[in-house]
Length: 117
Length: 319
Ligand SMILES: Cc1cc2nc3c(=O)[nH]c(=O)nc-3n(C[C@H](O)[C@H](O)[C@H](O)COP(=O)(O)OP(=O)(O)OC[C@H]3O[C@@H](n4cnc5c(N)ncnc54)[C@H](O)[C@@H]3O)c2cc1C
Figure 1 (cartoon, rainbow over the protein chains, first blue to last red):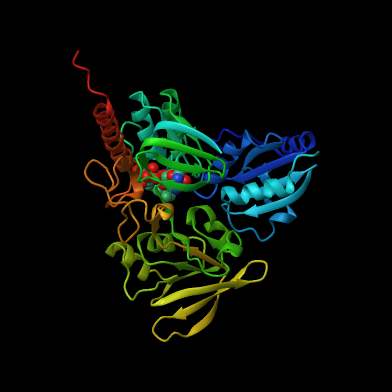
Figure 2 (figure 1 turned 30 degrees about the vertical axis):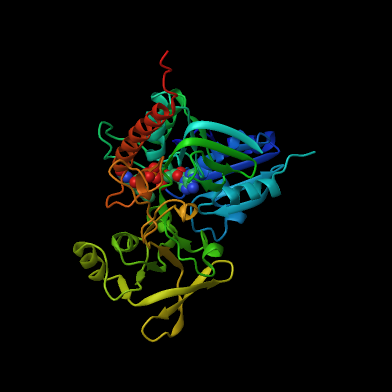
C-alpha cells in the first residue's frame, strides 16, 4: 500500500534507512491522502525540481513500517498529520506536525538542508 | 526585471483556472497560468470525488493531475507555487508581478483564486497547530482518543464534525459565538442531543495556551465579557470559508464578503477581466460549478479578445 503521489515512496524501514544513507538532505512527509497532508505532498512535488540537492519522499502513516517516523522522539507530542521530517546526514534536523505552507517548508529547507559548499 | 507577454493570464490553478486554461489554449490563445499554491487548489483536498459527472471514482489529486496535463498539452504555460506581488488590471495591458523579479503582461485576465477555510487568528493558533489545534476531524480525530476537546463553530461542518469526533473524544464542547446555530436542523438536533456534546454559545476563543502542547483556551463570554481559562486537550476549528481575494481589493469590485462580483458572462467591472470558481459571488461551490463558470469565462474572454483585435485592426485601404 502506498500514497498516490508522484514522490518517491518509502515502503519499509529498510528503504527509509537506505534513503538516509544515500542522501545528505532528505525530507519525508509521513501521512495519508487527507486534506492536511495532500497540500504538503503537492508543495514537495513543486519544489523537487528547484531543490535538486534534497531527496523528497513520502511514507504512509498507517504502514507498520512507518514506526521509524511515528515513534521517533522528535514526534513526541505531535497531534496532527502529516508528520514531516527533515534529515541531514541521517540525523533529524527538524520535524513538523500538521499542514505547512510553502513559505514554511522553504524556510526549513533553506535553513536546515542547505546544499554543502 | 524579466518581462513576458501573453494573450491571457489565469490567476489560480484550481479546477476553475485549469478549465479556463484548457479552453483558452485550445483556442490557440497564448495562456499563462500563475498559481500561488499547488496545482489543483482545494480539489486536491478531496480524497474521493464522487460527484464529478462521467467519472465514477477519482481522487481530487488525480483529477487535478489530469486537468493539468490537458492544459499543458494544449499549450498553456503553468507556473505554480509563485508569490504574486502585485496585480494591476485597469490599463489595457494588464500586469502581474511575481516573485520580486518577473512582470507578466496580458490583454485579458481570468481571476480564479478560489477560497480557503477560515482560521481564528488569535494568539497561540500558529504555535499549537498540530500540537492540539486541528482543522480536520478525519485526519487528526484519533489523536484525541479518550480526551476532552473543543470544537469552534456553529455551522454544518462544526456540528457534523463535533458528532464525528465523539467516536474518539470522551467529551466535546462546542464553542459558538452566536446564540443560535446556522446549520441544517437535523445537524443541530443530532449535535445538541448527543450525550457526549456540550455547548457554550455567545462565547469566543480569545487565546490558546500551553507549554509544549495545547493545554487550554481562554474563552470570552460575549454577554458578560468575562474571560476564563478552559482546560482542554484539543481544539478543532470549523468556522467557515473565505475567498482568496486579499490582493484584489480595489482592483475589481468585491461584495461585502470579499467575493468577486461578475455578470452572466463572468466579466468583472473591469474591461478585459473575468472571474470564475469559488471566489466569485455565488451560492454553490463545487468542482462542477467552478468548471462551468470557468468555461463561460474562457469563452467570453476569447470572444472579448477576438473583438478587440478586430476593432484594432487597421481598416483596409480603399485602393
Ligand atoms: C475538504 C473539501 C472537500 C471537497 N469535496 C468536494 C467534492 O467532493 N466535490 C466537489 O464538487 N467539490 C468539493 N469541494 C469543493 C471544491 O474543491 C471547490 O469548489 C473547487 O476546488 C473550487 O475551485 P476553484 O478553482 O474556484 O478554487 P480553488 O480550488 O480554491 O483553487 C484556487 C487556486 O488559486 C490559488 N490562488 C489563490 N490566490 C491566488 C492569487 N492571488 N494568484 C494566483 N493563484 C492564487 C490557490 O492557491 C489555489 O491553488 C471540496 C472542498 C473541500 C475544502
